[in-house]
Length: 113
Ligand SMILES: [Zn+2]
Image (cartoon, rainbow, N blue to C red):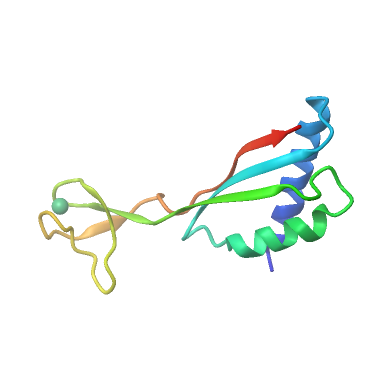
């Protein structure tokens, strides 16, 4: 549900960009969403279609890049994706600690036409 306000923001930013570029409409936006960001891509897409109706964003494609969370090994420093039920580094077996990778949420690009 909390995707609603953030999607409104995205649309505002895209419309502003579109107007400033002198374009007629937004063709595509690209988002980067980490699996641990707390935002659900499908919900953003749904709200985008809903809120975007009647705006410069109407009919625009929403492309989402999902980022899997990674842990950083406390032994060898390697970044790795967590296996289910385990925090162990696949290389040396030491425990990994959480990083910010996977918590991303940002607008990567806006294409207008
Ligand atoms: Zn390691």
